[in-house]
Image 1: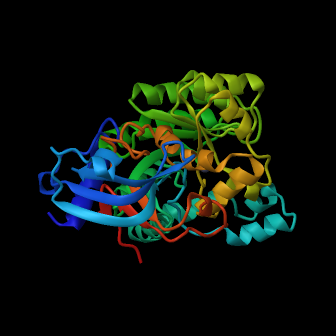
Image 2: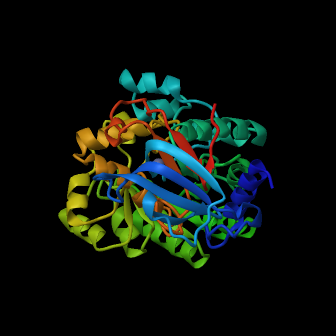
Length: 427
Ligand SMILES: [Zn+2]
């Protein structure tokens, strides 16, 4: 099987699997062992590095990791790669994006900056509903091309796994269209699709409750039938989808077998985080407004706080209390929130830089937030996010130091990216 076919097969398996992201089945054509040697390995907590390390990959996973003078005699790798003392660490996982949409809202940004209110922008045909109209009208082939460009921008920065939310079509036919386009995206990136029909109220519905009932009874069953997504997201905020209305919908989504993630507490203490913790959602995202009690409850839960500081920069919001969450022992991930309205950047370096400057996260915490904790936010930490035996062999190899990352906005140091043990060729 060629590498291309192997990558396509891998993505097909990822997308069709129920429950999500089960381990890649063994692939006989790829069952030989490959030794990667002479490398400097970042510690699991990114606080130090160890030289003259090596690992062996078989069937797309790490099967052995250790000092290169201690390779077990029973392992007989057929191939060898000398990494020439390059630094190696896990590749990045981008766990919150709205990467599929049509049109642009760049002109709106200037309006907002010159003092035009959201309401006026909406009245002039702008805002999320303008993206909705363009996305509904868009042909699948055009959406595929545009979204593939976004995927490639992430891939260039060392992102091996990418979450993509629907949510700019807001009706059965077109939300399904978006999720079907996500299935057609080309790897080797691993895609985690999330259904975000509950993003905004479309003009066809008078109340949020009515629309959520439509999503639960008409749209979710179709997504399930076509196996287009395993996760459901919702934007919970006062005067939008309120927590009590959302709860009924989210419980129904769970009953239908979906995992949950919630846009929570971005603008106020909306009850979104409380609900995420109560329903054991995989993540509560934004999490800007938190009481000390909520921070404590977060730390006692398995729900990951996915923080999105680039969106906070664009929205001129407060930044989330990352330091309090981490000091309490909560799991914190970082992501871009890439979307056409409130965060039109795909820059991981900017996200990490803001986390360091504005949220007082240490560099090792930023690396952990973009690897292991991001995997946990997506419910795939048993499969990837670390350089560890039985995990997917997704890693970055570079002549740069850890300190060179998340330092200069818009800049990713030169590196090689390996996904499931294969080197990714990027233009
Ligand atoms: Zn978002």
